[in-house]
Each structure stands twice: as structure tokens, then as C-alpha cells.
Length: 275
Image (cartoon, rainbow, N blue to C red; front, side, top):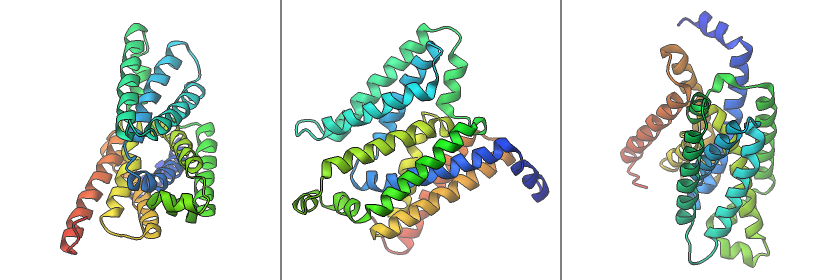
């Protein structure tokens, strides 16, 4: 594919919408991913994506708008996971595992009992970034501005909560409120990202950039910036390769992220860093 052909493809409205949504969702996912990985809640994206799959199955079964059904259910699930994980007897990984397995089973049952919806479910499971609408563009831009704005505005508090909750509480910071806020934003990112990456792959967009950046830098600020840059770069490269080689876009983006992680691991070893 020549440069002229690439430029011609980029001029199509549906490609422009895909680029905008992809950049915005990748940015949000990478920023939130840093906090979630450091707080050891990295699998919450996977759990919420399974809840999203169940919500989409219900929406398609009853011919309801998927976005308006999945959003409240995924947000409610994120709050429930956070609430359960804060109890001493149940850890965060257990809460996520219960939510993920239960939601996946429910979604499969609904799909099996409903005729003629397998193709629609598959499109949401594996993503269809070129099917983005103007509504998706508006929502992704609004979410990105909201997430980045809150992150900049409450940077110091988020930093304290991420590394030392007890010290943050001693300073009078409402740690629980910020934890639920992060959970809420993660749920919204997962819902918007499901159309782009699919329910099976959206969690990787949250985890991989943060893990990759963590191999190379130590400071919180550098980690956030590098994770965002890695996420955007991997999205651009993955989208380009999917066009050139006619690959599934979501799988292409994730594959580039995995390759970036492997490269970061090798580079860290060459630099004498093991963590």
C-alpha cells in the first residue's frame, strides 16, 4: 500500500471516526490502566468486559440499544466489584472472578436461547472499529476530556491513593470516593472500547501499555506519560497493519501491544532492570 493509498483511506469518514474513537479510548485506557495495575486491579477490565458481553446479549435479545443497556449494568458491576473487594474476607481478584464467570455464563445462555443473534454478538465480541458512529465519537471525546481533566486536577491525590492509602486517609482524603470514581471511569472506558476492541480484547488495552511502561520507568508521572504514548503508538501501528494485511483490527492492536511488551522486557534486561 503506497502513501497515496493510505492517505486516501484516511480521508474516508468512517476511518476518521475510527481514528478519533481509537485515540480517545486508548488514551483513557492507558491512564486508568496505570492506576489499576499499580493497585493490582488490572483484571477489573476483563471482569467488566464479561459483564458487558452479558448486557449486550440481553440488549440484542430484546432489540434494545446496546449502549444504553450495557452502560448502567457495567457501571453497577464495577461498583459491586469495588464494594465487595473492600471487604476483608473477599479479595479483589475473587470479586472480579465471580463477576466475570457469572456474567459470561449468563451471556452465553441468553445467546443460546435467542435465535438469529449470533452474528451480532460476534461483532461485539471481536470488535468492529470501522463501524463507529458520530455518537461514539462524541462520547469518546467527552470521556477522554473527563478522564484527563480529572487526572490532572486530582493528580496529587490519585498519586497518594495509588501508593499509600493509609497516608492518604490520614490527610483527610476520601479514598473510597476516589476508588469508586476510578471504577466508574473504567466501566465507561470498557463500554466504549467494546465496540472498538471487542469484549474479549478490551482489557488488554488497559493492562498492556501500563505493564510495558512499568518495565522501563519508575516514577508515577513518567509511567503515565509513557503508557499513554505506548498505547497511542500501538493503536496507530496496529490499525495501519490491519489495513495493509487485512487483519482483524482489535487483534492487530493487541498483537502490537504484546510485541511492545516483549521489546520492553528485552530492553529492561539489557539495561539491567528486572522489575
